[in-house]
Length: 171
Picture 1 (cartoon, rainbow, N blue to C red):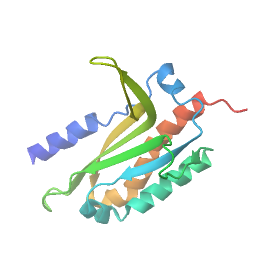
Picture 2 (picture 1 turned 135 degrees about the vertical axis):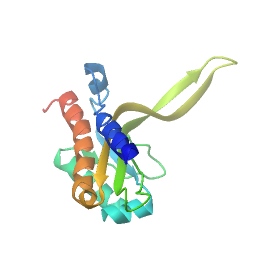
Picture 3 (picture 1 turned 45 degrees about the vertical axis):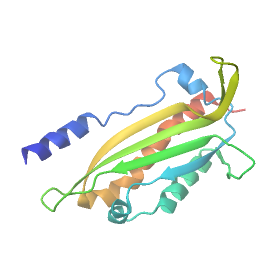
Picture 4 (picture 1 turned 120 degrees about the vertical axis):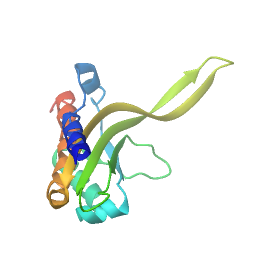
């Protein structure tokens, strides 16, 4: 029981929000015309416990982004749009004695960039690179998970939108 209390206290202490901390980070979002949303969900058992699917999360996030005025870009084989990558990890309760879920929600904006390597001759690599990041950790009891999980995903998406709107003047 002491271990559970320690874990709960530790996770609550770590549930700090990490987002764009300065003006330069926000400026990386200036001129962003839209994003492709990709959700990496937790395990099927956790999704079932939270009464949600990957499609539900994706739809909810895309709707929220559209409402804020950000275009959703469909990915195909010929384009490489900016990627809003949402990774959700969770532990599942080991027993009924400890009905707690530790949930990590991590959001990154990845954009295609070119890296030039000059060691051993010039070589260029084109790949996605992180330009913005936010993370939060939560601790849910079994009953509260269904009620709070969706709202908490949107809270982290709101961090992205706040920085995007701050970097993108209306006009």
